[in-house]
Image (cartoon, rainbow, N blue to C red; front, side, top):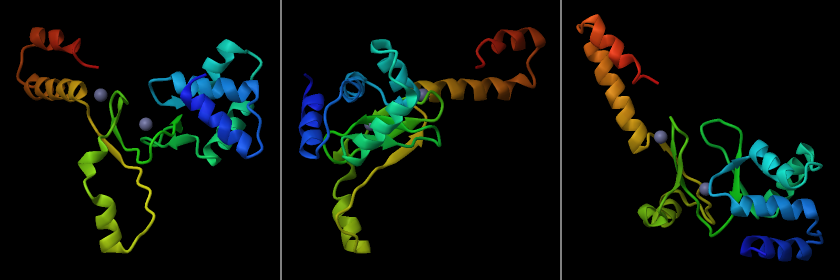
Amino acid sequence: MHHFVSSSNELLRKRGYRLTPQRHMILSVIQEASEHLSVDQITERVQQRNPYVSLSTVYRTLELLRELGLVRENHFLGEQPRYEAVEGQAHHHLVCRRCRTTIHLDEALLGNLHEQLQGQYGFHGLTLDLVAVGYCDTCWQILQRQEHSSESMADTPATEHEERQDQQI
Ligand SMILES: [Zn+2]
Ligand SMILES: [Zn+2]
């Protein structure tokens, strides 16, 4: 059993819940994913193992796991929530607007932000969930190229213009 699944099992039992086969499957799917999964993606992966697990079971289970603090629900760019295992405390993300690549931010970069917030605003027991939105390097380069090609398009002959169209996405 994976670490995440077994520690979740322990917590579920402590709170009087059983590790049902459905809960086990959902926890495993989340544990094994390298990306942040939507409810649809979780359901799809769970149904590959057992086609009889319904979407509403997945919803209910995620809700329970979230309440128990085992699973984190992220809201990126106003899309449907994405789920992942809660591991460690702070959890910050860099999200690309174009390809939706999501990177976990190195917490050390934030320095003593917690203490500063406590000092300046008198806020205590803080939980920070930072989402920094921008463009990843690959997308940025594509966008730069597009910008250049549309800038020069006005005064380029038609033949060259055609050639550039395939680059546009
Ligand atoms: Zn990107
Ligand atoms: Zn994450």
